[in-house]
Image (cartoon, rainbow, N blue to C red; front, side):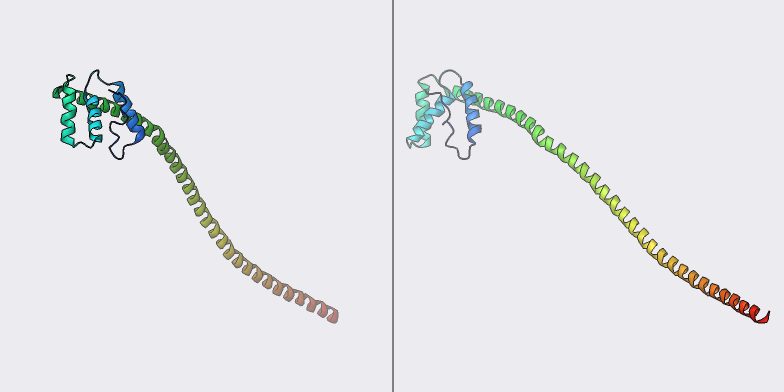
Length: 183
């Protein structure tokens, strides 16, 4: 019997080709000697391809296999053997997948943690700058009010000084005139 198992489960819809090929290779490399479940499954497939009904195909495949020494117990035991091979492959796949997830996804998680920390730093820096902007605007506003107030005070001082100066200057001018006139 042909040991190529690539078509053994090809009738099942939605199988991933790569995964199916990998699992079939594992079954092939662990194929038990003699006529067992895998050869039975191939015989069954050939009979089903001839449009034989399921029950007749199973009975015919088993009748042929039993002439080669296959019993129901051996058939079920070998089927369990192949299930265990698949289970072992699944375990190895799960471990490899977990490692890949840790490498690929875990790396992205760590990278995102670094980005989130950097983002927090930037946001904090922006917050400090915004607070500083508010403080500087308050100082500008305070200085504007102080400038206006000081400007008013200085203008008032200038006006007062001018008045006082003019008054004293005028008084001295009057005195000079009086001195010239009376002395």
